[in-house]
Length: 264
Image 1 (cartoon, rainbow, N blue to C red):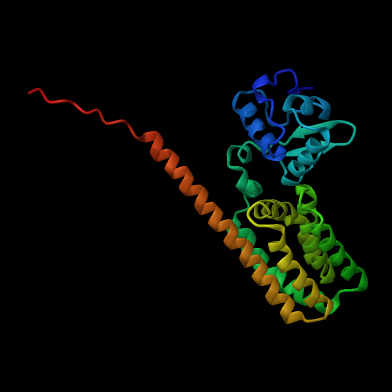
Image 2: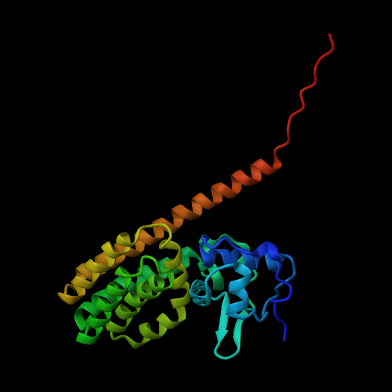
């Protein structure tokens, strides 16, 4: 069975202060380019990875969970972690746009969410049970305590939206959530790096209150504002990234102009 442990170069040892998830993405990029990793490769054990990347195993474990959410790796109980077979394109783009996995564009995903989620929030306000409300409250509580835990932040944010899908009592919508949840998780991962935690809570809390108070139209309007806000953040970040890439290309193509002194 192919593994990457023996070929991992010393130059990939990390500074423990780096964001571990981003660090792993960058290192996987290097190893793919250098031919040290291939699609479907079985990764070294957590202990080996922690030593090579010079990070705590607890931090590494959390980073691997985030990578699994993003679809970069698959973790098999009792067997280890594998680099997925469809990640080469993902690992070649900036961290900010990993949610584009599965050919899901920002426009496609946000358009679908704007079509569905405001209406589902309206239905949730009409149909939510006590258990549904309890799950929404749990998601808010978990989100409030997730500031230093990226995996918990993504999971609790995703739980909030899943709870609304479920509270709508529309079985087709609940099934659809399972189809798009990975792309949503990546979208959440990106936006969580662009704003403070309180920004997200400023949308989630009013939506939860509107559902609790059976105010369907208000819940729908608040959900629409929430998704539009996330879309604006993503579009602005993409524009910024494109400008940076363009600037880098321009700088790389510039050549120094030699000044020739005229003879007197």
